Image (cartoon, rainbow over all chains, first blue to last red; front, top):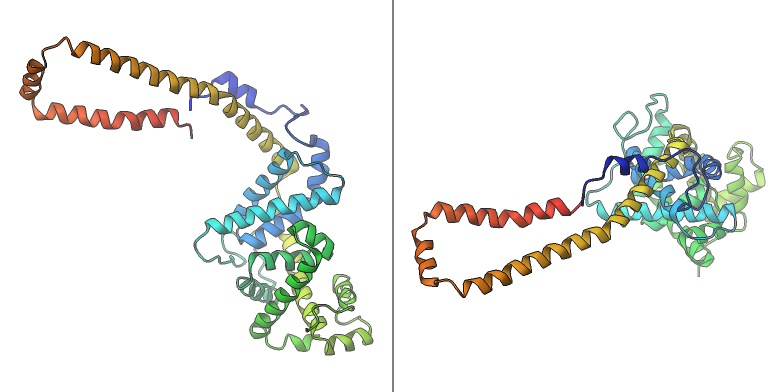
Length: 194
Length: 152
């Protein structure tokens, strides 16, 4: 490709407040939507990829695709669902291109967002959960995340994953049972905590 | 067929989400959970997820919305420039093909007027190194052109 000239570079500099008709939202409405959604989406990306830097990149990509999409959103929840679907597709694409087995970084290791040494038991449980989740399919993990981390209803999960409600119920049932069996082995005595 | 859901699941989920599970929950719900396999699984899995999610939300360090917006705008403009320059690159490519074609035709027409025997003798008289250098140049030229015009 030819070199970009200085005048083109100047043109490329975004000007604050200038409306961009290639985006489906203006900066103000984007800002408020982002404040409400960015943290849960980032956490989902981080927990699914195991890499906070990759989660940053995918977060940027997810919002960029949302901004560029031409899909009309009739409500905030519809837009949220659409954003989650973009994020989920990005995660699946990332996994497809990763040949190596994914290992989650422990606290204090590179790729983990923060270091906190005072969470011994909690860290252990989270590590057990991470390990168990590697035995589940991508779709099972998404469904469990939406149901039990984000507290989404079966209807919302169906919309976000592009499934029927009946399929979601079966998917959740199988995923939960499999995870429970894996965790029962990893965390003996967990049943007694009930 | 075995059950895949229990009508007390939502009660368990509400109790976990509100932090009432397991200490401050109704005795009746707890008794049900102990004898219902589905609710036992729901309670354990949702507790682990809630714990993990809360901790991860605390740890999350997301970039500001302004930064994400600015990067998106920058990328959008870069893509617009790239899209606009695509036809120019195509025209450049077609021009190169045309020029090369004209040169080849001209060379073919002119070669009929030369003494091919003399040319052959001239070629055989040149040192091998000259032909090697010319071969390398001929091989590298398309590669160089590729890098110049291929963009990223």
